[in-house]
Amino acid sequence: MFDSLSDKLDKSFRQLKGQAQITELNVAETVKDIRKALLDADVNYKVAKTFTDSIKDKAMGQDVLKSVKPGQQMVKIVHDELTTLMGGEQTDISIQGSPAILLVAGLQGSGKTTFCGKIARHLKSKRGKNPLLVAGDVYRPAAIDQLKVLGEQIEVPVYTEDDNKDPVKITKSAIKHAKQTGYDMVVVDTAGRLAIDEDMMNEISAIKKAIAPTETLFVVDSMTGQDAVNTAKEFNDRLDFDGVVLTKLDGDTRGGAALSIRSVVNKPIKFVSMGEKMDALDIFYPERMSDRILGMGDIVSLVEKAQEQYDEEEARRLQRKIAKNQFNFDDFLKQISQIKKMGNLKDLAGMIPGVGKAMKNMDIDDDAFRGIEAMIHSMTPEERNNPMIINGSRRKRIALGSGSTVQDVNKLIKQFDETRKLMKMMSGGGGKNLQRMMSGLQQKMN
Image 1 (cartoon, helix red, strand yellow):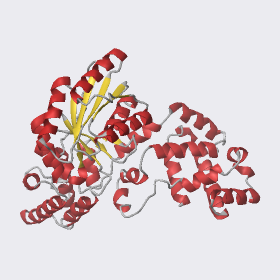
Image 2: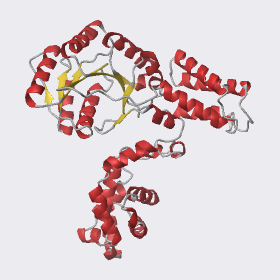
Image 3: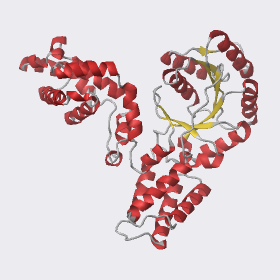
Image 4: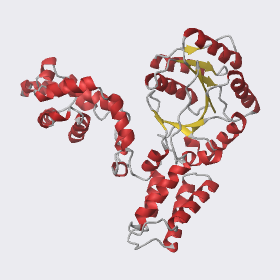
């Protein structure tokens, strides 16, 4: 995500290294390169021009600090302008109402139905809501089936009317059903088309008028670049939606939609979606996205992801075990599981300042822990509880059972023993550094 843009912006900043101060000449060259980088990323031309003009004005303004190096000054100016371009501050969705109604629109193939499942899970697990999904796409049976499958995965019911082909009546009935049965949030999936047409616009407008949603979100496939922005503008002219959802940001996207859409439709980006997993949904924070684009990482989001998996009672239990030197391989497996739940390993690494660029060309498998898990699962319960009894013959059996080598098993046990000693020394920290140490162990194993 944004890798190409990040590289080109970094290259443009490098031109200012070694310069004694910002001048009209070196600013002009840098701004020219920044504009080209934005256009290459498929940012709207008018947006790119306005953006770089503003950067130039700020760079040549009187408020530039003379004590800061030119390159650092330019990075700060671009960071602030990027944040403003993408909306400035995070904008929340409205979930007030009895029930609150979320209407989701978008073209076919944009990831709209998948997003409905993700947002329902988000509302249930993180906002304490009791959601009901509504299958309003009556033209594609596969869309209804997909929503049912997603509903089962996240344990959220799906309202359908198999014999009814009127989406307005279906959504009105669904809301009535929600009121009668105690659901406080209704998420309506609507029909998409391969392209915008009048029938589609009339239908989605009629649904919105009939149900008066609390929030209307437009789902955009970020891989389509400026086409996504143009589509969003046409939808907004008819629907006047409340916010945008960017999907497929983990794909081969240049980032133009994310950087252009706020300026073009004047509506905030509220969520970004990456991958098919139901937990792969993030609230959009403009400043954090600017950090990532400029290679500064996103340590706040990383901490938040860790906190979501952090169980205080489990941490206290581990602290007691660590203090008594009783931390074992079963505990280790639990920590690996928590790390994996935090998300894609490469994305997590990219949130650490300075690490993203260093790892951009590295292929980090999401199953990077698979070998370690296989070796631990090949141990007997007694061996997992007391690693000290794992002698030579046991190591051979573990290697054979896990498809690894005795050397791999030796390395795991050695590193585990070193880590356990280190954790005992740090046991006063309450186990809060445990996940970081687990990650370090995994890196050593590789």
